Length: 156
Image (cartoon, helix red, strand yellow):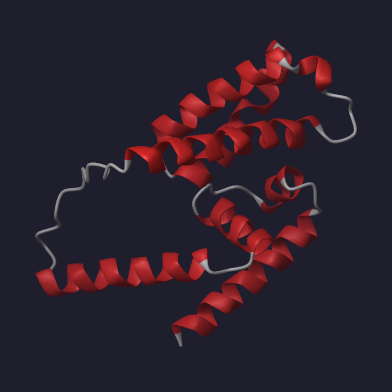
């Protein structure tokens, strides 16, 4: 199991970071993913890549985390400091632009949305995205391009 951890820990962390956008959460869920994988390694039958199996465990844990946080209904503490070099108006406009882009990302169809999040937030390569989603690198590139095109159309 140690070899599996060394080989896939970075990929699983990046995947979870792209979903959570929080380093602490991604780290915690990465550890939990490998703990759960260790407990259920006997169920892995080799029908898919090890990375795909681990990402499915990670995704399940992420959904559990979302469900747990929905029940808490707490607002995260915003630890960003205001940029006083910008005017208040430009800061508000920047935040609104960012929110509108995230809204548009959220409205993309499922595989496209996930590819966009993995590429933009998780900073994964197209090869890693393809491997993660059990697709080819070309599929990931094309899906990202189409998603980017949809976002650009929405901004116009």
